[in-house]
Image (cartoon, rainbow, N blue to C red):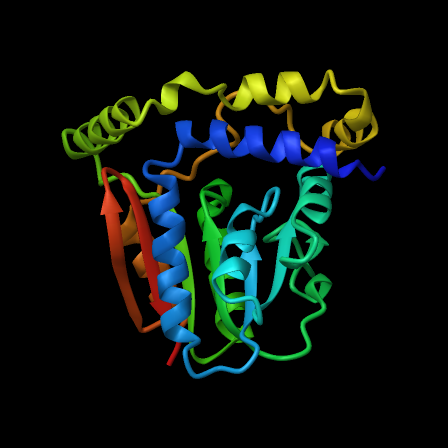
Length: 256
């Protein structure tokens, strides 16, 4: 079910554009995550990273570009996005097909040494709270002392009026940057389904996953404060946001 480089490039580039609908100041958020990784791995030789919910390799590619000696393991459950990543960003990471939170998912990663960091961007919000807590605990066990979990996502405040305000700020920023002129999640998947080179992968995706409509998945609705509480329960004593625009944040948890 492989795809050509030309096809992978086309769909990854379109993915990058449509994702601007959903991640406020997406490129800046990627850059901040890379800054954090640069800091926590400054004294490491061949840093070892895990990219959670990697999609078509967007974050892994940027981290690899920042520091090419980094060894990245990237995991996702979407066979089509993984194949795009393996083709278009082949040198950035080793890609693993697994469901985050499912029993045995960390064994599937094939890690041979502790992680220096785990990263995620707009991917963990679909995990129910008990599954998220278990995931945080497992990640704490995989990280070396001083290693970090870096999560860039939308973390709504506790409720209105603050949640309405941060959402509004994000929408206005998207309008100013003209993110709304690009296709959205649903139209991207509708177009993908019509590409004959991706037919088998799309069919496999539909067999495994819920329908691809909507805005890309469910949302546990957890605030940044609740994420911090869960992280501390999981063994991360040091948790802090390092960047925010509207309700888009980068949250960092450091293991003792």
